Image (cartoon, rainbow, N blue to C red):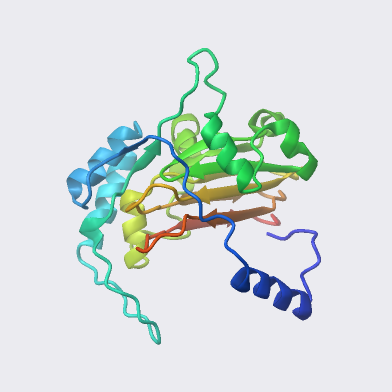
Length: 273
């Protein structure tokens, strides 16, 4: 996957690094919004509850349970030259969904608090504003996608771009065909954990011979305290297709650590880019 942007020079890279590490962190704020969470801890019951809340089919629950049972047989890796405090996996909230205040008559609208949050992050979710950047965005807050822009425009070209959860409901055959083909739940400790408890992420499918006319992007925002974020994203470019995809993620500044354990699978078929 490539973009047409020229990579920054070493001097520009140094300037960017200095700005990020020396400047004030702009994204350390917390959004005051009511959030639906489950209790702390990880068990088979937790995995089943996440799947139930997301209304998933039996085959996906089976995938999660196999991953969880495999995770129980593994040990967390010991990283060389890193001193990471032990992670208490029983002290994490594995599902947190912001409750949006929207009218039942306009379900496509987004809660003003969430809209303001993503505006402050520089991620416009109104398509009129976003059009100038020629980028379609899937915005994820904690465990759920809250808005995907330009879905209809891309669908006119046969391109599917939506949240992973919506793809499971609307395009189950595609998800079932490609899920876990790049990163199996047996691949490593965190792959097994993610496969058991993943919440949301993005799904993109670009049909044969189609060049996606927009940049695709997912922006992950962690907001709720004591939660983990377990992204699952699946990007598929069919034969002779083209797509450019990027991600961003921010979180509030807090004294305690929060775990973000993600899997992004990218499948490029013959001559796809």
